[in-house]
Length: 232
Image (cartoon, rainbow, N blue to C red; front, side, top):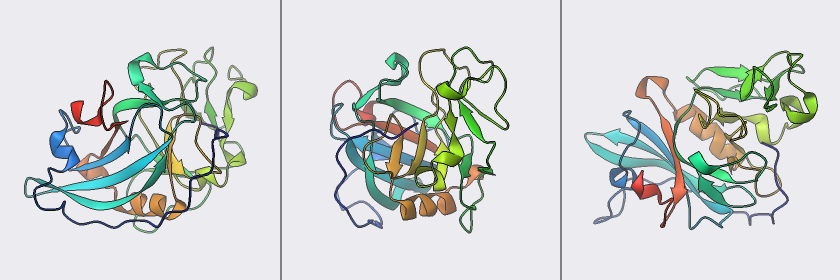
């Protein structure tokens, strides 16, 4: 989704973390559901009004969740909201547990990428037109029933969409008006219009790490309250 106009997040160095400190229960171990795989990305904000937080990617090894990496994250300019209650064009990031259908980018896939990766071209669009049969889908070229004004021409966002992962929000059975085009992508200038973003190098590392055979998912939420990530 198009980036919002929130203040620029101060530059922070990436963190490469190993096992959780002694006595700390890893975040994935506190979730109701992690998708059934052995890889998980968590995107956590302090509260629903936050526009920044942390993305961490985890591996399940020997029955224990271990951090593979972590990076500062940005969320929607209007914060976060429960995914089932979200409305389109509200600049909010939907909370919930989602699969990751495929990756894409204006740049070539980073070395080691195993996920299905679609290279963005001049005729690549993400249809966000509620009246289109292609609502919340990658299209190439843009179909006649999908208005350009209501969609994203992906090639026009070479910074944010240098590398991106599709978040499966409202994807399998799209509900009109709930929202389209939610991605995990590289940072733009500030907060997003509903996506989750991380520094560009972090996106490259995530794509090189993710293994479709291990069924990675993403859990988006807050540190407490109704959208607490630990309640999924």
